[in-house]
Length: 461
Ligand code: NDP
Image (cartoon, rainbow, N blue to C red; front, top):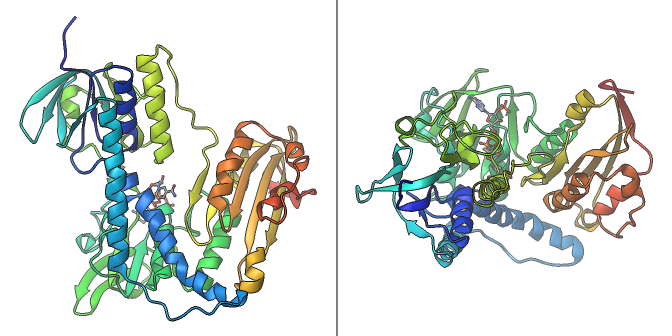
Protein backbone atom coordinates (compact mmCIF):
# COMPACT_ATOMS: atom_id res chain seq x y z
CA UNK A 1 0.00 0.00 0.00
CA UNK A 2 1.45 3.41 -0.91
CA UNK A 3 1.63 5.88 1.92
CA UNK A 4 0.42 9.45 1.61
CA UNK A 5 0.92 12.63 3.58
CA UNK A 6 -2.83 12.94 4.09
CA UNK A 7 -5.89 10.72 4.01
CA UNK A 8 -7.83 13.61 2.50
CA UNK A 9 -6.79 16.83 0.81
CA UNK A 10 -9.54 19.36 0.08
CA UNK A 11 -9.03 22.15 -2.44
CA UNK A 12 -11.35 25.04 -1.70
CA UNK A 13 -12.50 26.42 1.64
CA UNK A 14 -16.13 27.19 0.84
CA UNK A 15 -19.30 25.54 2.06
CA UNK A 16 -18.69 22.10 0.52
CA UNK A 17 -14.93 21.99 1.07
CA UNK A 18 -14.97 23.04 4.69
CA UNK A 19 -17.76 20.60 5.53
CA UNK A 20 -15.91 17.67 3.90
CA UNK A 21 -12.64 18.53 5.62
CA UNK A 22 -14.13 19.18 9.04
CA UNK A 23 -16.25 16.05 9.19
CA UNK A 24 -13.52 13.78 7.76
CA UNK A 25 -11.04 15.17 10.31
CA UNK A 26 -13.53 14.64 13.13
CA UNK A 27 -13.68 10.97 12.06
CA UNK A 28 -9.95 10.74 12.75
CA UNK A 29 -8.72 11.12 9.17
CA UNK A 30 -5.58 13.11 8.52
CA UNK A 31 -6.93 16.07 6.57
CA UNK A 32 -5.56 19.24 4.99
CA UNK A 33 -7.58 21.95 3.29
CA UNK A 34 -6.25 24.73 1.08
CA UNK A 35 -7.96 28.02 0.24
CA UNK A 36 -6.40 30.76 -1.90
CA UNK A 37 -8.68 33.61 -0.85
CA UNK A 38 -10.76 33.52 2.33
CA UNK A 39 -12.33 30.66 4.29
CA UNK A 40 -16.10 30.57 4.01
CA UNK A 41 -16.15 30.76 0.22
CA UNK A 42 -18.61 32.66 -1.92
CA UNK A 43 -21.58 32.15 0.41
CA UNK A 44 -19.96 33.67 3.46
CA UNK A 45 -17.47 36.09 1.97
CA UNK A 46 -19.24 37.55 -1.07
CA UNK A 47 -22.55 35.80 -1.53
CA UNK A 48 -25.55 34.72 0.49
CA UNK A 49 -24.58 36.11 3.89
CA UNK A 50 -23.40 39.64 3.05
CA UNK A 51 -26.18 39.82 0.44
CA UNK A 52 -28.80 39.12 3.10
CA UNK A 53 -27.27 41.81 5.32
CA UNK A 54 -27.56 44.22 2.39
CA UNK A 55 -31.18 43.17 1.90
CA UNK A 56 -31.93 44.11 5.51
CA UNK A 57 -30.15 47.44 5.05
CA UNK A 58 -32.14 48.22 1.94
CA UNK A 59 -35.52 47.62 3.63
CA UNK A 60 -35.27 50.32 6.27
CA UNK A 61 -36.50 53.20 4.16
CA UNK A 62 -39.80 51.36 3.67
CA UNK A 63 -39.97 50.58 7.39
CA UNK A 64 -39.55 54.30 8.14
CA UNK A 65 -42.31 55.17 5.66
CA UNK A 66 -44.62 52.46 7.00
CA UNK A 67 -44.13 53.63 10.58
CA UNK A 68 -46.28 56.72 10.03
CA UNK A 69 -49.40 54.60 9.55
CA UNK A 70 -48.85 53.14 13.01
CA UNK A 71 -48.57 56.51 14.70
CA UNK A 72 -44.83 56.95 14.63
CA UNK A 73 -43.02 60.03 13.52
CA UNK A 74 -39.60 59.13 12.30
CA UNK A 75 -37.06 61.93 12.18
CA UNK A 76 -34.86 62.70 9.25
CA UNK A 77 -32.99 59.61 8.16
CA UNK A 78 -29.89 59.12 6.08
CA UNK A 79 -27.85 56.18 4.93
CA UNK A 80 -24.09 55.70 5.14
CA UNK A 81 -22.80 53.08 2.69
CA UNK A 82 -19.31 53.01 4.18
CA UNK A 83 -20.73 52.25 7.63
CA UNK A 84 -22.73 49.35 6.22
CA UNK A 85 -19.68 47.94 4.43
CA UNK A 86 -17.55 48.23 7.58
CA UNK A 87 -20.19 46.53 9.76
CA UNK A 88 -20.69 43.80 7.16
CA UNK A 89 -16.93 43.23 6.93
CA UNK A 90 -16.69 42.75 10.70
CA UNK A 91 -19.46 40.15 10.66
CA UNK A 92 -17.95 38.34 7.67
CA UNK A 93 -14.54 38.25 9.37
CA UNK A 94 -16.22 36.77 12.46
CA UNK A 95 -17.86 34.04 10.38
CA UNK A 96 -14.62 33.31 8.56
CA UNK A 97 -13.01 32.88 11.98
CA UNK A 98 -15.73 30.43 12.98
CA UNK A 99 -15.13 28.35 9.85
CA UNK A 100 -11.42 28.13 10.65
CA UNK A 101 -12.14 27.42 14.30
CA UNK A 102 -14.34 24.50 13.33
CA UNK A 103 -11.62 23.07 11.10
CA UNK A 104 -8.92 23.57 13.70
CA UNK A 105 -11.12 22.05 16.41
CA UNK A 106 -11.47 18.90 14.30
CA UNK A 107 -7.68 18.83 13.79
CA UNK A 108 -7.78 19.57 10.07
CA UNK A 109 -4.68 21.36 8.80
CA UNK A 110 -5.63 24.79 7.42
CA UNK A 111 -3.52 25.99 4.50
CA UNK A 112 -3.82 29.53 3.18
CA UNK A 113 -2.57 28.95 -0.33
CA UNK A 114 -3.67 28.16 -3.81
CA UNK A 115 -3.37 24.44 -4.46
CA UNK A 116 -3.13 22.74 -7.86
CA UNK A 117 -3.07 19.12 -8.90
CA UNK A 118 0.20 17.62 -10.14
CA UNK A 119 -1.19 14.12 -10.59
CA UNK A 120 -4.03 12.05 -9.16
CA UNK A 121 -2.49 11.94 -5.68
CA UNK A 122 -0.13 14.94 -5.63
CA UNK A 123 -0.96 18.56 -4.91
CA UNK A 124 1.28 21.57 -5.29
CA UNK A 125 0.95 24.34 -2.70
CA UNK A 126 1.73 27.53 -4.57
CA UNK A 127 2.69 29.67 -1.58
CA UNK A 128 5.70 27.52 -0.75
CA UNK A 129 6.14 25.50 -3.94
CA UNK A 130 5.99 22.36 -1.80
CA UNK A 131 4.14 19.24 -3.00
CA UNK A 132 2.11 16.94 -0.79
CA UNK A 133 0.27 13.70 -1.43
CA UNK A 134 -3.15 12.46 -0.43
CA UNK A 135 -5.07 9.23 -0.72
CA UNK A 136 -8.33 11.02 -1.51
CA UNK A 137 -8.83 14.50 -2.96
CA UNK A 138 -11.95 16.64 -2.90
CA UNK A 139 -12.18 19.55 -5.31
CA UNK A 140 -14.59 22.20 -4.10
CA UNK A 141 -13.34 25.38 -5.74
CA UNK A 142 -16.78 26.78 -6.47
CA UNK A 143 -17.59 29.18 -9.26
CA UNK A 144 -16.94 32.70 -10.39
CA UNK A 145 -19.09 35.30 -12.12
CA UNK A 146 -19.47 34.94 -15.89
CA UNK A 147 -17.38 37.90 -17.17
CA UNK A 148 -19.24 38.07 -20.51
CA UNK A 149 -15.93 38.48 -22.33
CA UNK A 150 -17.72 38.86 -25.68
CA UNK A 151 -19.27 42.18 -24.60
CA UNK A 152 -17.24 45.18 -25.74
CA UNK A 153 -16.52 47.12 -22.55
CA UNK A 154 -17.09 44.17 -20.22
CA UNK A 155 -13.95 45.19 -18.32
CA UNK A 156 -15.74 48.40 -17.28
CA UNK A 157 -18.47 46.37 -15.55
CA UNK A 158 -18.53 44.92 -12.07
CA UNK A 159 -19.86 41.59 -10.82
CA UNK A 160 -21.44 40.74 -7.48
CA UNK A 161 -17.88 40.26 -6.12
CA UNK A 162 -17.16 43.97 -6.44
CA UNK A 163 -20.67 45.03 -5.39
CA UNK A 164 -19.76 44.06 -1.84
CA UNK A 165 -16.85 46.50 -1.75
CA UNK A 166 -17.81 49.51 -3.84
CA UNK A 167 -15.99 52.59 -2.56
CA UNK A 168 -19.07 54.74 -3.07
CA UNK A 169 -22.73 53.99 -3.53
CA UNK A 170 -23.40 54.93 -7.18
CA UNK A 171 -26.18 57.34 -8.12
CA UNK A 172 -27.36 54.92 -10.79
CA UNK A 173 -26.79 51.30 -11.71
CA UNK A 174 -27.63 49.09 -14.66
CA UNK A 175 -27.78 45.40 -13.83
CA UNK A 176 -27.68 42.81 -16.60
CA UNK A 177 -29.38 39.46 -16.06
CA UNK A 178 -32.71 38.22 -14.84
CA UNK A 179 -31.67 35.55 -12.35
CA UNK A 180 -31.25 35.43 -8.59
CA UNK A 181 -28.33 37.86 -8.35
CA UNK A 182 -29.63 40.45 -10.80
CA UNK A 183 -33.05 40.57 -9.16
CA UNK A 184 -31.78 40.59 -5.59
CA UNK A 185 -29.23 43.33 -6.24
CA UNK A 186 -31.69 45.43 -8.21
CA UNK A 187 -33.87 45.49 -5.11
CA UNK A 188 -30.92 46.12 -2.80
CA UNK A 189 -29.56 49.08 -4.76
CA UNK A 190 -33.00 50.55 -5.33
CA UNK A 191 -33.76 50.24 -1.62
CA UNK A 192 -30.56 52.10 -0.81
CA UNK A 193 -31.62 54.98 -3.02
CA UNK A 194 -29.79 54.13 -6.25
CA UNK A 195 -31.60 54.74 -9.56
CA UNK A 196 -31.80 51.15 -10.77
CA UNK A 197 -32.37 49.56 -14.18
CA UNK A 198 -32.45 45.85 -14.92
CA UNK A 199 -31.88 44.58 -18.44
CA UNK A 200 -32.86 41.01 -19.23
CA UNK A 201 -32.82 39.05 -22.49
CA UNK A 202 -35.96 36.97 -21.82
CA UNK A 203 -39.63 37.86 -21.78
CA UNK A 204 -39.92 37.78 -17.97
CA UNK A 205 -37.39 37.82 -15.11
CA UNK A 206 -36.50 34.67 -13.14
CA UNK A 207 -36.96 32.19 -15.95
CA UNK A 208 -37.02 29.06 -13.80
CA UNK A 209 -39.77 30.18 -11.41
CA UNK A 210 -43.57 30.04 -11.46
CA UNK A 211 -44.87 32.46 -14.08
CA UNK A 212 -47.43 33.98 -11.72
CA UNK A 213 -44.78 34.95 -9.18
CA UNK A 214 -42.43 36.22 -11.85
CA UNK A 215 -45.10 38.57 -13.13
CA UNK A 216 -46.14 39.56 -9.61
CA UNK A 217 -42.58 40.40 -8.63
CA UNK A 218 -41.93 42.28 -11.87
CA UNK A 219 -44.99 44.46 -11.28
CA UNK A 220 -44.06 45.08 -7.64
CA UNK A 221 -40.50 46.07 -8.58
CA UNK A 222 -41.70 48.46 -11.27
CA UNK A 223 -44.22 49.97 -8.83
CA UNK A 224 -41.36 50.68 -6.43
CA UNK A 225 -39.48 52.52 -9.16
CA UNK A 226 -37.12 49.92 -10.61
CA UNK A 227 -36.89 50.08 -14.37
CA UNK A 228 -37.01 46.66 -16.02
CA UNK A 229 -36.11 46.24 -19.68
CA UNK A 230 -36.96 42.78 -21.00
CA UNK A 231 -36.07 41.22 -24.34
CA UNK A 232 -33.01 43.41 -24.67
CA UNK A 233 -29.30 42.98 -24.02
CA UNK A 234 -26.29 45.26 -23.75
CA UNK A 235 -24.25 45.39 -26.93
CA UNK A 236 -21.53 47.76 -25.81
CA UNK A 237 -20.39 49.55 -22.67
CA UNK A 238 -18.16 52.62 -22.95
CA UNK A 239 -16.99 55.36 -20.66
CA UNK A 240 -17.48 59.10 -20.99
CA UNK A 241 -16.96 62.03 -18.63
CA UNK A 242 -20.31 61.40 -16.89
CA UNK A 243 -19.96 57.69 -16.32
CA UNK A 244 -20.84 54.66 -18.41
CA UNK A 245 -22.78 54.69 -21.66
CA UNK A 246 -24.54 51.52 -22.72
CA UNK A 247 -25.85 50.65 -26.16
CA UNK A 248 -28.51 47.98 -26.26
CA UNK A 249 -29.58 45.56 -28.96
CA UNK A 250 -32.89 47.42 -29.39
CA UNK A 251 -30.98 50.63 -30.06
CA UNK A 252 -31.41 52.31 -26.69
CA UNK A 253 -28.63 54.39 -25.18
CA UNK A 254 -28.52 54.14 -21.40
CA UNK A 255 -26.32 55.87 -18.84
CA UNK A 256 -25.27 54.52 -15.48
CA UNK A 257 -22.66 55.13 -12.82
CA UNK A 258 -22.06 51.40 -12.50
CA UNK A 259 -22.89 48.43 -14.72
CA UNK A 260 -23.15 45.11 -12.95
CA UNK A 261 -23.14 41.77 -14.77
CA UNK A 262 -25.18 39.00 -13.16
CA UNK A 263 -25.19 36.54 -16.02
CA UNK A 264 -24.65 33.30 -14.18
CA UNK A 265 -21.58 31.79 -12.56
CA UNK A 266 -18.97 29.59 -14.21
CA UNK A 267 -17.24 26.63 -12.52
CA UNK A 268 -13.84 27.72 -11.23
CA UNK A 269 -11.49 25.12 -12.67
CA UNK A 270 -8.93 27.14 -14.60
CA UNK A 271 -5.31 26.29 -13.85
CA UNK A 272 -6.24 23.63 -11.34
CA UNK A 273 -4.10 20.95 -13.01
CA UNK A 274 -7.14 18.78 -13.78
CA UNK A 275 -5.63 17.59 -17.06
CA UNK A 276 -2.45 16.49 -15.25
CA UNK A 277 -4.52 14.37 -12.92
CA UNK A 278 -6.72 13.17 -15.78
CA UNK A 279 -9.93 14.67 -14.37
CA UNK A 280 -12.59 15.24 -17.04
CA UNK A 281 -14.53 18.48 -17.40
CA UNK A 282 -17.55 19.28 -19.56
CA UNK A 283 -17.91 22.01 -22.19
CA UNK A 284 -18.60 24.61 -19.45
CA UNK A 285 -15.42 23.67 -17.61
CA UNK A 286 -17.39 21.94 -14.85
CA UNK A 287 -15.93 18.80 -13.33
CA UNK A 288 -17.88 15.76 -14.44
CA UNK A 289 -18.94 13.54 -11.55
CA UNK A 290 -21.05 10.43 -11.07
CA UNK A 291 -24.06 10.13 -8.76
CA UNK A 292 -21.71 9.97 -5.77
CA UNK A 293 -19.71 13.11 -6.68
CA UNK A 294 -16.78 10.95 -7.80
CA UNK A 295 -14.85 12.14 -10.87
CA UNK A 296 -13.57 9.81 -13.58
CA UNK A 297 -10.43 9.46 -11.44
CA UNK A 298 -11.20 6.93 -8.72
CA UNK A 299 -9.73 8.82 -5.73
CA UNK A 300 -10.83 12.33 -6.71
CA UNK A 301 -14.24 13.74 -5.83
CA UNK A 302 -15.71 17.11 -6.73
CA UNK A 303 -18.64 18.86 -5.13
CA UNK A 304 -20.47 22.15 -4.98
CA UNK A 305 -20.60 24.79 -7.71
CA UNK A 306 -17.47 23.49 -9.47
CA UNK A 307 -19.61 20.57 -10.68
CA UNK A 308 -22.38 22.89 -11.94
CA UNK A 309 -25.21 20.72 -10.64
CA UNK A 310 -27.33 22.93 -8.38
CA UNK A 311 -25.51 26.13 -7.40
CA UNK A 312 -26.76 26.49 -3.85
CA UNK A 313 -24.87 26.41 -0.53
CA UNK A 314 -27.05 23.83 1.24
CA UNK A 315 -26.67 21.57 -1.79
CA UNK A 316 -22.85 21.74 -1.61
CA UNK A 317 -23.03 20.94 2.11
CA UNK A 318 -25.36 18.03 1.43
CA UNK A 319 -23.02 16.73 -1.29
CA UNK A 320 -20.16 16.93 1.22
CA UNK A 321 -22.11 14.89 3.77
CA UNK A 322 -22.93 12.30 1.10
CA UNK A 323 -19.22 12.13 0.20
CA UNK A 324 -18.40 11.42 3.86
CA UNK A 325 -20.98 8.60 3.99
CA UNK A 326 -19.71 7.13 0.72
CA UNK A 327 -15.99 7.38 1.37
CA UNK A 328 -15.64 7.02 5.12
CA UNK A 329 -18.74 5.26 6.41
CA UNK A 330 -19.04 2.47 3.89
CA UNK A 331 -22.49 3.74 3.00
CA UNK A 332 -22.60 4.89 -0.64
CA UNK A 333 -25.01 7.83 -0.64
CA UNK A 334 -26.27 9.81 -3.60
CA UNK A 335 -27.18 13.46 -3.05
CA UNK A 336 -30.94 13.97 -3.17
CA UNK A 337 -31.90 16.87 -5.43
CA UNK A 338 -35.63 16.39 -5.24
CA UNK A 339 -37.72 19.24 -3.81
CA UNK A 340 -35.05 21.80 -2.95
CA UNK A 341 -36.69 24.81 -1.34
CA UNK A 342 -35.31 28.10 -2.62
CA UNK A 343 -35.85 31.81 -2.13
CA UNK A 344 -35.12 34.94 -4.07
CA UNK A 345 -34.45 37.71 -1.55
CA UNK A 346 -36.14 40.30 -3.65
CA UNK A 347 -38.63 42.79 -2.27
CA UNK A 348 -41.20 41.27 -2.13
CA UNK A 349 -39.47 37.97 -1.56
CA UNK A 350 -40.09 34.74 -3.45
CA UNK A 351 -40.11 31.42 -1.63
CA UNK A 352 -40.74 28.25 -3.51
CA UNK A 353 -40.50 24.47 -3.38
CA UNK A 354 -41.44 21.87 -5.95
CA UNK A 355 -42.78 22.32 -9.43
CA UNK A 356 -43.99 25.54 -11.01
CA UNK A 357 -47.46 25.43 -12.53
CA UNK A 358 -45.87 25.24 -16.00
CA UNK A 359 -43.56 22.33 -15.13
CA UNK A 360 -46.26 20.45 -13.23
CA UNK A 361 -48.59 20.86 -16.21
CA UNK A 362 -46.12 18.90 -18.34
CA UNK A 363 -45.77 16.07 -15.83
CA UNK A 364 -49.28 15.51 -14.51
CA UNK A 365 -52.51 14.87 -16.41
CA UNK A 366 -54.66 17.00 -14.13
CA UNK A 367 -53.74 19.62 -11.57
CA UNK A 368 -55.71 21.65 -9.08
CA UNK A 369 -54.29 25.11 -8.54
CA UNK A 370 -55.11 26.90 -5.31
CA UNK A 371 -54.25 30.55 -5.47
CA UNK A 372 -54.73 33.43 -3.05
CA UNK A 373 -53.80 37.04 -3.62
CA UNK A 374 -54.34 39.41 -0.74
CA UNK A 375 -53.13 42.49 1.04
CA UNK A 376 -51.12 41.55 4.12
CA UNK A 377 -52.42 42.92 7.44
CA UNK A 378 -49.44 45.19 7.97
CA UNK A 379 -50.09 46.91 4.65
CA UNK A 380 -53.56 48.03 5.79
CA UNK A 381 -52.25 50.63 8.25
CA UNK A 382 -49.00 51.34 6.49
CA UNK A 383 -50.98 52.09 3.36
CA UNK A 384 -48.44 50.29 1.22
CA UNK A 385 -49.91 48.98 -2.01
CA UNK A 386 -48.62 45.48 -1.66
CA UNK A 387 -50.07 42.13 -2.59
CA UNK A 388 -49.06 38.72 -1.44
CA UNK A 389 -49.49 35.68 -3.69
CA UNK A 390 -49.71 32.11 -2.43
CA UNK A 391 -50.12 29.11 -4.65
CA UNK A 392 -50.38 25.39 -4.15
CA UNK A 393 -50.13 23.06 -7.13
CA UNK A 394 -51.87 19.76 -6.44
CA UNK A 395 -51.80 16.56 -8.49
CA UNK A 396 -55.53 15.82 -8.81
CA UNK A 397 -55.04 12.04 -8.98
CA UNK A 398 -52.90 11.53 -5.87
CA UNK A 399 -53.92 14.79 -4.08
CA UNK A 400 -50.23 15.36 -3.42
CA UNK A 401 -49.00 18.95 -3.22
CA UNK A 402 -46.31 19.04 -5.89
CA UNK A 403 -45.48 22.74 -5.79
CA UNK A 404 -45.83 25.62 -3.34
CA UNK A 405 -45.05 29.21 -4.29
CA UNK A 406 -45.16 32.39 -2.27
CA UNK A 407 -44.53 36.02 -3.11
CA UNK A 408 -44.38 38.35 -0.14
CA UNK A 409 -42.81 38.97 3.23
CA UNK A 410 -41.03 35.99 4.79
CA UNK A 411 -41.69 33.82 1.74
CA UNK A 412 -38.27 32.23 2.19
CA UNK A 413 -39.01 31.31 5.80
CA UNK A 414 -42.32 29.73 4.76
CA UNK A 415 -40.71 27.85 1.85
CA UNK A 416 -38.29 26.19 4.25
CA UNK A 417 -41.16 24.75 6.31
CA UNK A 418 -43.22 23.90 3.24
CA UNK A 419 -40.18 21.97 2.07
CA UNK A 420 -40.75 19.53 4.92
CA UNK A 421 -44.39 19.01 4.00
CA UNK A 422 -43.65 18.37 0.34
CA UNK A 423 -40.73 16.11 1.19
CA UNK A 424 -43.02 14.15 3.49
CA UNK A 425 -45.44 13.73 0.57
CA UNK A 426 -48.28 15.66 2.22
CA UNK A 427 -51.54 15.83 0.33
CA UNK A 428 -53.89 18.75 0.01
CA UNK A 429 -56.08 16.95 2.58
CA UNK A 430 -53.19 17.14 5.08
CA UNK A 431 -53.04 20.88 4.48
CA UNK A 432 -56.84 21.11 4.90
CA UNK A 433 -56.90 19.32 8.23
CA UNK A 434 -54.12 21.50 9.63
CA UNK A 435 -55.45 24.20 11.96
CA UNK A 436 -54.88 27.75 10.77
CA UNK A 437 -52.66 29.99 12.86
CA UNK A 438 -54.40 33.32 13.04
CA UNK A 439 -53.55 36.07 12.20
CA UNK A 440 -50.68 35.16 9.93
CA UNK A 441 -50.15 35.33 6.21
CA UNK A 442 -49.19 31.64 6.16
CA UNK A 443 -52.69 30.61 7.31
CA UNK A 444 -53.80 31.13 3.71
CA UNK A 445 -51.86 27.97 2.89
CA UNK A 446 -54.27 25.86 4.93
CA UNK A 447 -57.49 27.74 4.19
CA UNK A 448 -57.71 27.58 0.41
CA UNK A 449 -60.52 25.03 0.25
CA UNK A 450 -61.64 25.14 -3.38
CA UNK A 451 -59.34 25.05 -6.41
CA UNK A 452 -59.04 28.42 -8.12
CA UNK A 453 -58.68 26.63 -11.46
CA UNK A 454 -57.61 23.34 -12.95
CA UNK A 455 -54.97 22.40 -15.50
CA UNK A 456 -55.81 19.44 -17.72
CA UNK A 457 -53.26 18.11 -20.23
CA UNK A 458 -51.26 21.30 -19.74
CA UNK A 459 -54.25 23.57 -20.49
CA UNK A 460 -56.10 25.76 -18.00
CA UNK A 461 -59.76 24.72 -17.77
P1 NDP B 1 -28.83 32.69 -12.73
O1 NDP B 1 -28.54 31.45 -13.46
O2 NDP B 1 -29.86 32.71 -11.67
O3 NDP B 1 -29.21 33.82 -13.77
C1 NDP B 1 -28.40 34.16 -14.85
C2 NDP B 1 -29.13 35.18 -15.68
O4 NDP B 1 -28.29 35.67 -16.70
C3 NDP B 1 -30.36 34.57 -16.36
O5 NDP B 1 -31.37 35.53 -16.31
C4 NDP B 1 -29.87 34.34 -17.78
O6 NDP B 1 -30.89 34.42 -18.71
C5 NDP B 1 -28.93 35.52 -17.96
N1 NDP B 1 -27.87 35.31 -18.93
C6 NDP B 1 -26.96 34.33 -18.96
N2 NDP B 1 -26.11 34.51 -19.97
C7 NDP B 1 -26.49 35.64 -20.61
C8 NDP B 1 -26.00 36.34 -21.74
N3 NDP B 1 -24.95 35.93 -22.42
N4 NDP B 1 -26.64 37.47 -22.11
C9 NDP B 1 -27.70 37.90 -21.43
N5 NDP B 1 -28.21 37.28 -20.35
C10 NDP B 1 -27.61 36.15 -19.94
O7 NDP B 1 -27.40 33.18 -12.21
P2 NDP B 1 -26.97 34.31 -11.17
O8 NDP B 1 -25.73 34.88 -11.72
O9 NDP B 1 -28.09 35.23 -10.86
O10 NDP B 1 -26.65 33.47 -9.88
C11 NDP B 1 -25.74 32.36 -9.95
C12 NDP B 1 -26.23 31.23 -9.10
O11 NDP B 1 -26.05 31.56 -7.74
C13 NDP B 1 -27.71 30.93 -9.25
O12 NDP B 1 -27.95 29.97 -10.23
C14 NDP B 1 -28.11 30.45 -7.90
O13 NDP B 1 -28.07 29.05 -7.90
C15 NDP B 1 -27.07 31.02 -6.95
N6 NDP B 1 -27.68 32.10 -6.14
C16 NDP B 1 -28.65 31.76 -5.26
C17 NDP B 1 -29.24 32.73 -4.49
C18 NDP B 1 -30.32 32.36 -3.54
O14 NDP B 1 -30.48 31.18 -3.24
N7 NDP B 1 -31.13 33.30 -3.06
C19 NDP B 1 -28.84 34.13 -4.57
C20 NDP B 1 -27.83 34.36 -5.54
C21 NDP B 1 -27.27 33.37 -6.28
P3 NDP B 1 -31.91 33.20 -18.98
O15 NDP B 1 -32.82 33.13 -17.82
O16 NDP B 1 -32.60 33.62 -20.22
O17 NDP B 1 -31.07 32.00 -19.17
